[in-house]
Amino acid sequence: MDAFRQSRERYGYRRIGQMLREQGIRVCARRVMKLMTAHGITPRFKSRRRYSSYSGEHSPAPANLVKRRFHAKAPNRLWVTDITEFRIGEGKIYLSPVIDCYDGMPVAWSIGTSPTAELADTMLEQACATLADREHPVIHSDRGCHYRWPGWIRICERHGLTRSVSAKGCSPGNAAAEGFFGRLKQEFHYNRDHRDDGIDEFIDALDAYMVWYRDERIKTQYGTSITKRRRRPGLMA
Picture: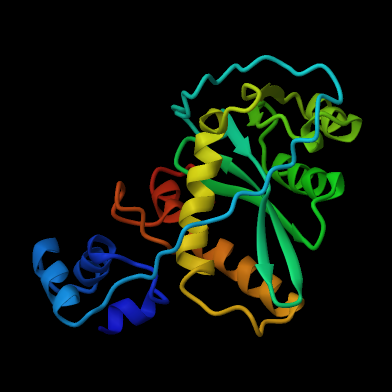
């Protein structure tokens, strides 16, 4: 199906159905599911490996203000962040994003070949540059060392961000970030063979996916992309 190829073989039947309806083709999700099944059309799925930046308690941790309540009534009130790892033939690539819990938008991200504090700090500075003067989100993370070092703390203080961290050894404590990484790896990483990709090629492809996820990917809850939904009521230029 052309719609499936246009989604880069990432969409299931619900999003394919939404794409067809946006093109003026009236079809129910059940019909799309039957057609995809009959033709053997399905996104590729694979289990994922989790990267952890936890290396002990480097400094006193702030309180867990979120307590697994990953919901916000407006943009830029609650952000979550983490770092995930990709393995390709030439080495490892790391992605550090900030996700807005209002609608799942990736506000900013940085990509590199080493999971350094600079990777996280650069991403946070980029995210803070999008804030209006009176916006001061809670920024929630796991207990990784990147979020406990002076550079990260200084950025949070300078922009009025309130820090929050999950409980020690509690993966569900940062479930919003983990959920984003799960979708990312199923749609981008596991449905392609990256063994022959060079590092620069992979980074370019990952960055392009992040832009596509933010601006074009259909979120079934809204029936459109995150960016298009925000633009309708003027929440985004």
